[in-house]
Length: 243
Image (tube, rainbow, N blue to C red; front, side):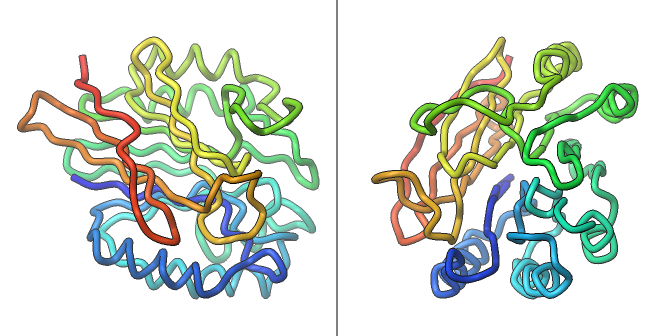
């Protein structure tokens, strides 16, 4: 089972790199993942033409299940309405062959700060009341990411959210926002941040990338995470057995 995780595509020039986006789409389609997760910041300012352009790229990715959630840039200028019209609910759950993916909206209108909110906790817990491999996806990073400068914009309720996810037995958390890829292993729960897939908004000497997660039940539930560099090449960054 393969899950492709991309984030922070920001489809408006001068930051957006269309040629690189084409390479990312081509590479993902060659990989043939069953699931694709997009963790927000599809746009720069949440305008309708930006969402439509983002849709034109995302709809060309071939897979069985797509989970797309908004980022803080998508929540600007009443972008939440545009997101819902094109991509559906801002928080959602999908299930596929023993995998549960819960997408959580961590945005607030016209603010860059993250916030999940207590009103979502019960819904998240119900979605995760199941067996199998559990994935939660949100835009904002739940733990500080190295090489990103002064820390800011972690969800203001990150501690409560982390406790909830650990208590629910979540296996994997997918985040974006900081444009820097990183992996944390917290109490047996893997937290994978994605870099920006196809913009020039990168930190020093950190190239564009996305994540590829491979699940191999034949090897007692082995999870592998590869950092896939958008310009070519890959790196195995995690290999772990569940349980």
